[in-house]
Each structure stands twice: as C-alpha cells, then as structure tokens.
Image: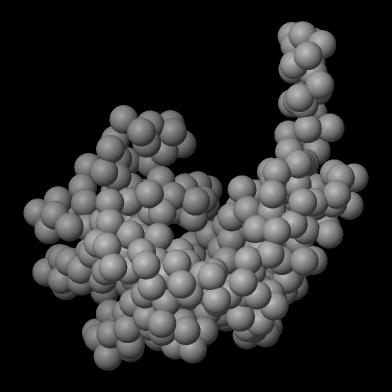
Length: 320
C-alpha cells in the first residue's frame, strides 16, 4: 500500500516507518522539518513537508495514498497545546482524508482514556475514538498504555547516574510496550481487514509499578536508587498554579498524567484477542527485563570504550 505516516519522526512514528518499509509498503512521511528527518529518507521513505495545522500541506501529502497511520501527538516541549495539535490538527487530517477519498486509518489512542478524562490528552483521545466510531472511516484503534522508551529518562538514566528518581502517590501499574512492538500491530492492521472498526488494547506482557521498575534498574546496574516521593497534593497544587498561565498548558498536561500514574490505577488489559486479531505471536513481544538489560549493556559498553580517552579525574565521574 501507499501509506502516509503522520508523526513519522517521533518515538513511535519512526518505528512505524521502519516496519512499513520492511513489510514492503510504499511509505510517505509527513514531517515539519525535512532536514531533521534525513534518516527516514535513508531508510527508503519519501519525505513530504507539512503540518497538521496547515490543510493545504495535508492535501499534498495525502495525494495518491491509500491509508494513513497516525502516530502524532504534541511534544512535551511544544509551544502548542495538545488541544491544538491532537484535536484541531486531527480534525484537519480527517477532513483532508475525506476530501481525498481515503478511508483506511490506523489511530493510536490511550488505554482506558475514558476513565481519566481529567487528563487533557486522554480526554482528546477518548473523544477522537468516539468520533471515529460514528464516522465512515475504516479505522483501527490501538489503545497503548505507555512506551518502554519513556522509562529511560525517567528511571534508567537517573539510577545509573546516581540522580534523583521522582515518584508520586501509591504507584499505578502500567503494561509498558516497546514502540517497535506497537509498530508491528499498526502495520499488521493494514493487512488485516477484520480489524476495521476494532478498538483493541496494545500493551506489554506485564504491568509494572514505579517501585518495580526502580528495583529492576537497581538489579541491572548494581546501584541503589535515590528515590524521592512527591505528594499527590503537591502535584495538584502545581497544576492549579500552572493552569493559570497559557504557557503552562503543556506542563499542566504532564502533571495531570503524573496524577494518573500515582493514583494506583492499573493500565493493563488482556492481549489474547489483540494478538489473534492482528495475527501476531505474543512470544515475540519484548519484556521490560530484556529491554532494560540491552539498554544498560549497550550504554555501559560504550562508556567503558570511552575510558581510554579520559583523564583520571574524568573517569571518576563515570556512572559505574
């Protein structure tokens, strides 16, 4: 198929591009800054400059395509709010798809979004799912709980580098999934017509609390984590303050997520139906133990290779 990937340079989007190409699809990547996306072109993808907020660019990007995989969301450091990117931008995309006569869509949502509508992005995902259910699109919705990649900056690096690890509340259990595995589901949907109209969980093999992830990092690095607990009351107070300022909207969104992750909720779901529907083998899914071990093995090996070029004082600052 000729497939347009929206959000192609993101954590998930780049994996979707790679998987699509490996499966033999003709891939077009919607990117805002082509010079920063040269690696996608190097893999064999076609780059087209555009923005979800610029409808003319979407019309050009969609020309000749048969399907769309949407992996875009507002970045943490974006000057635009999630309402602008994830709602207004997606409405632009859907209108342009209708105008181009493209019905096939794979959309990434968030697991149990309807249960946490106080979080702006989860509310938007819930509303988008509802919109797609009542539309004429041939949509497949993947409900993701969290990416393993996000745990690197949150836990893996701070533990290795003896930095503070911040946790809040009683700790939710989250079934993190490797973004490469999520991409397998997204691309498989294109070849599985029976997934049209389905909204299925796309989560990892096991749900982990923050405490369990920290203990895993400690075991793999043989270092003791410096854990600092933040009261949920403090997070709510910070949300109240930053929400008064437009520039703090994205900060408020992230603090809202922190409330969910510290609420004791369980972001997990049975995956038997999902694996059957997409024709994938659960044995191929990456476990968090394996993912973090490979990460630490790689980063520590590279740091040891650097030792030869460091002075004695610089070596003392290495995190092992």
